[in-house]
Length: 401
Image (cartoon, rainbow, N blue to C red; front, side, top):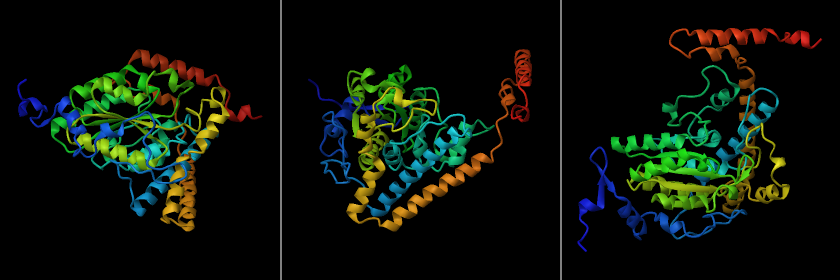
């Protein structure tokens, strides 16, 4: 069999730069000198773990967890503040201040750990629950909740934070992330893209198409699936016959299952995947095995489809408490730090509440504006119908009498 030439071992990028072809990329992962060899960390169905639920380190032959005390404290603080913000937003929705909210409780490690692995020039494509990632990317929490209140021009500038607007269409944005990553490769930029989605979205056809395009084009994208065990009321085992991370094998790129409640493992695995993507060796699928502690959205009642015993089992694996125990074990934080962090969380919640309650109420008639460049008789007719519909309601002051 003829020897493989250098030209055969690499495939050209659209801009003329070269990256390893799929077979060469796989060989590089198997090479003991590759850093880190992702195929080596994917063995077995048990999630990769660097920290036990009681905060004890778990050694790993290829991955090194974060050891800097200051960095560990920053991650803990981000997790606590994200949880406080999430709890306050949930309360605001229950009190009628927000139209909807998508709680993240229980998924703090998956989000904060992966966000801390990103570089400023990496680009993020979130779904609709990545409040922790948004926080780490510098998105103002008030801007974030504004889209759930429905105010005009709510949201943020994606270019200012390299963080795209939330995508409410389930599973649509991995295609956008893949296309963006292909553009990054074409430009020759030394950055990567990450797309967040859930186990439910993994069943969508758009996600499969994104995997195909990313693999064929060796796009520098990391697919980060937060498997929180429930796609609304559908359990994960009703969606796939194999662990979700194994789906990557069929597309020709690595998949890794990581303990999504272990912030150190998530950070290490995500960092390795991003480094692989930036080096031109193509995509990686990360399955963060975690749990949604609350409702899918505030319109959902999880007590109708899951057992209290299951919830209690996962509460014992609380990601915030896990990192706290680790900090205490290392003597890397004292009681004053934990107290101050909790107070920072309460202050963040208070500031968000104040800002939300001073926002103007959304004006429903605005939905008819900015649809067409010029007027349209169908829109005019719908606007008139809606105005008549609203006029049919008694003023609020009359209803209270």
